[in-house]
Amino acid sequence: MDFSGMKIKLDHSVGSPEAVTNWRQSVGFPVFGTGQPLEVGFTQITEKLNKSQKLVWFNMRQEPVAYIQGRPVAPRLPGEPHVNIEVKTEAGLEAMEKKLLEEISSRNKEGKIEVHKDAGFAENPMDREDITETMGVDQLKGFSSILAGLKETTFPGLTMVQVPFSEQRALPESNFDVIVKALSAENAATTQAVFSSQLGSGRSTLGMVIASIVKAAQMIQKLNKMVEAGMAERSWADNIIKTKFEDPLPSADNKDPFLRGEFDVIRQLLESFPETQAGKTLADKMIDINGPPPEGFGLQNLRKSIIQMKYKYDASTEDKQTVWKTMIINYLERYFYIICFATYVRQNANVGFEKTFVKWLDEHKELRSMIEEGKDKLEWTRKVDQTKVEELRQKLNGPDYKEKLGILVSDLYKLAFNTYKDIPRGPIKDNLMRKLACKTLMEILPGDVANNISQEIADKKLSIDFDTVVGLVVG
Image (tube, rainbow, N blue to C red):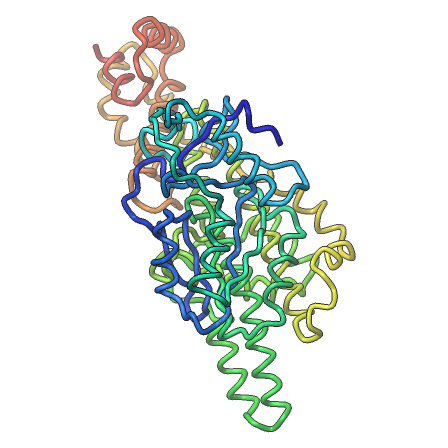
């Protein structure tokens, strides 16, 4: 990979003061997640862990990472400074890091180098502003070399594994097997696993969920062997398995079918392959304990984030919906693969994972086509009760439409509320309701009036919102 034309961007681009960003632990497992630490943060992490036990550090990033004066940086494409690059190469991590370090050194001008960062945090890349600053390059290191030094000096039981997952996705499929191979022969209760990515959100959470599923299956196997050996009662073991690995955690979200993950392609999966129902149960429990409070201590719930992102898509302007739509599709695909993986684990843990997940998917090839064809089958345009819209049109009809508008404002909001009644209260719902009320008002206005308002908005470069349209109607 050629880094010569790329920008060098700070991971801590918005100036996080924490040396260890977004550190958390999976509930009940020695599984941890973090954003890319500052160099001084590695020592802080080792102090949080048991140095007498094994530690597997999983680097979930595709892109190489270097450290300049103790701060992590990564390469970005010139036209996409806010998007993580996808490395399309078989080169190893250390080889890419070496090339990146050489490139950074070559840009040294009087002991300084230009680096990029975001002016502030914004979830949608289209809302981010790229700015630059200069840094000294007297301290230049690679990520893997820092971990190697940690192993030599303070944590002899540390091993590093690269798991280069695509951003937002559970691909390539072979990465599931990389994590399984690293953990399957280890003690589930004592082998520690740390998953790191840039922010420590999506990719780190994915790794934590995968590891939790593997460790849960190992613990289930241990309980079953205790029963077989006459060391425990079946009812006792089954009760632990049910409460720890199956029963959903209490949450008001469980009332919402979408927050439960009941999307069309997921229902198709469960109906076509009934064995995936048990896989979904295990996957959902591990997703929840690795998600945000109150179920876990994490950043992202890999199931609920699908519909939560859909709400943001609905509320955003059309020019920004493209990014949200891509994320939603990627999230749904990711959830589908997690369910398949949990099903595979339940079926293969008892034989030591002799068959790989990739091989299991090869034997169920229809699953790949199912998610490829079904991940885009969502309601991208919210259905509005057209009968109610027509009723409002008739009420507003006539030369005295301005006087009638005041009465209809309440009806417009009622229509918007009923259309989005499934969405929880908050600013996203408020924005959706105002956006729909505005769109509906423009629909039911007399044609010539609506055209004049559209022209005036364009001429004066006004924002198209409900208050603006109402003001132009009565003004």
